[in-house]
Amino acid sequence: MEEMDSLREKTIKDLIEKLGSKNINEIYKAKDDLKNMGEKALPLLIEALGNSDCSIRYRIPMILGKLKDSMSVDPLIKALKDEEKIVRRTAAIALGEIGDVSAVEPLIKALNDGNSGAAIALGVIKDDKAIEPLIKSLSKKDPDLVEEAASALTRFGNSEAVEALIEALKSGNTAAAIGLGNLGIDRALYPLIESLKNGNIGAGIGLGELKNKHAIEPLLEALKEGNTGAAIALGEIGDERAVPVLIEALETDNNDLKMKAITSLGKIGDKRAVVPLCKKLKDHDRVVRFHASSVLSKIGDEKSVEPMIEALKDEYFSVRGNAASGLGRSGDRRAIKPLITCLRDNTWVVRFDAVCALGKLGNKEILNELQTALEQENKKEVRDKIKEIIEKLSVECL
Image (tube, rainbow, N blue to C red; front, side, top):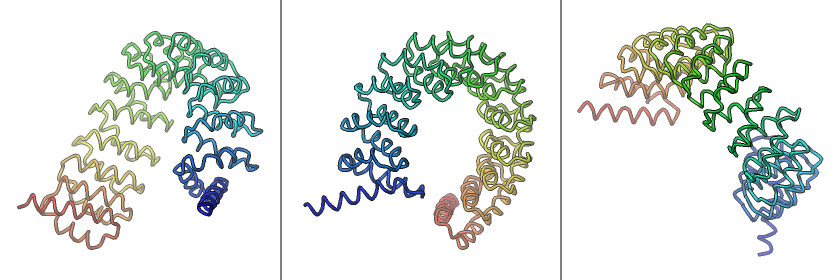
């Protein structure tokens, strides 16, 4: 028994040392293994909070937080005074995950000392004693601390917290804006609109969460001025009045705004967007082409079939895959021959998407093509899908 305990101790210590590795995969595996060992690893994990290697010390709380054992609380409270900021932050977050109220006062002190992780933790524990210190943190100079304090207050959601969040909008606090939207409080509508006019992107997102139709006109104006939050919000609200302005935004040089507009047009699903989106399949930026192909794949319209067939030749494999999936959903048999060509694509994911699409479009006429593809295919996932489609089409042809 002693020999087994000794072996286990060595294993745990070896895993803890690997937390300081420069190999990210080794770190992830060590963290998972230590979490899976549970309480058996606890004493040595707590001991490791005093390790001389900071890269080990700051990862230990991440594991202790997941184990949620009260035995960790006092050592983690002590770690709130570690010399390294990152250790103090992860220790605070771990205390929030454990949720022991005895940590509230030490966390409030850590918050007052500028620990943004303490704000996160206090938001999770939700002890009313934390509200006033969190409100005071909204006026601090550290932007990370201010954002985390606003997010934490959103979790409380009482009138005191809401008033503080509305006040925080005046300084352009993004987290306060999004939080108010998530809370669904109509009283926040006009303060959010005012914040939006002042350029707060988060206000646009918050208004999208509120889904109040009175926000449409201000959001349209903000979108015309390039506010990406407004583009997101209009997609969330889903009002068709937004379609022409979102289409106009597709021509901007701001790629972030362009992609947000594409996504929102996809959410609204208005057919007026199909032709303008098809033009984006030729955009110089591959990420824009990816978003456009993804949205067109979901909208599904006859006008997009030929442009999507052309997109099967795109240099970016994700665009080709989206095009294949969309053509499968279209039900248009013009896509069959181009999709058969994709069975020889040099990226297996595209070949997989093409097989799935052919399964939706094809009949016995493509069985020979699929059989040939099966003989030449070396990727198991694609081979299995081809076999499935061959069997499906063979049954349908009986």
